[in-house]
Image (tube, rainbow, N blue to C red; front, side):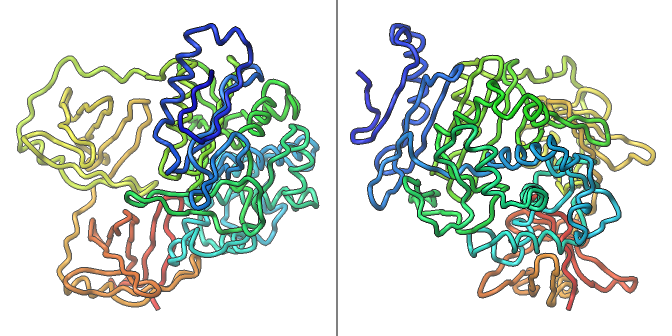
Length: 546
């Protein structure tokens, strides 16, 4: 008999082979999966989860509520929004057109949209697919207006307008990886331009129907009634509140689907539903101009878990969460769809996969066998602020208990060689002479490196803060803000009574409470003429003084 985790909640468990019921190990695995989701009940939202091997469902359950107001339970047939899991469908649509010879991956995107801004560099279709274009994320940019996503309606026309009016890029195309929804909205526009059909109809015929995905559609009009759809929620303190995506944008996200349909889609990797060439193109990774290969392919990330190849993507839109992963060597599929925005989907999904593949614990670089004794005076020379200009990330080094520490990391750094320190697999190096003086080289346990430059701490008096006060406008964000000094602090005012304190960090640079970086611009007479704002996915959005 199947034991229901919560009375009154429909939970379906389909076993692919009666022999499984006789295997204690499989029964234990089912119980372990159940335990991962044991916190959801009739007073919470929840999720639907599916696991299959070789196309045979071995676990299929739903937890929690689809609608807390009307006491509707989640079931395996409940419709959720898949967030950025949707990107692989937009990418597949583009690749179908590539296969047909209607698009070339190396085409300049201005070939199809000649009215798109000319930044003096070529942005290719391939750059868009791999998030290496440098395009600023439209949602991040528009949040600077005081109307972030979820606070007003945005349409594809709005999105195109925002992307088209940007004055610059986050980075040179191909030089870095920078996740941006703008890439996939643009690809949606490209599919429509080249195919002569809207993305909804094109993907329905070319992708959903061949895969047998009868319960999948795009949320291109949020007012449309969708039978069996779960309401999305996020936790605020101890309470859940509705958190629905009230916008009509799609392509970057907004796929409405079920765990059953995503199971069918995952089978395309083995059944070659779309053909071997499309699968190959979608899994193909690229190298940046510095020679480093990135894991993001075409709408999917291709990596490994405990030695097994993993094709995955997570999703998060408003209060919806999603995780879709496929492990070709095991023909193992894991699908997770949730209407609880307080839970990380990647963590939950991979915990399920690890029950079948083993836990993924890559070894950390070993701690140094020998350590050095460095006096406090020498350590003091390393303290201060350092910034990585490629993404405006800031490191703050300080002394505590006679040891050098990185703010936010906790624990003391262990000196093991001249100008080199170790901490939990991380290595920090301080070139001491020449043009590299004043730098710290930061190496992660995976071997990735980053260079940070020392900057001078900025502590302006109230009179100096007055230099920044005034009204500013951004054409990129279509936003006007006012900066004023009050009670010895610089404040940013948007519409209504929204006020945000700006805290000085380094010369002419401030951070707000969300850690957005404001860097002020001065003319030859040292007068402040504007500032740029850098936030996740959008760097150097310009505001000019009025």
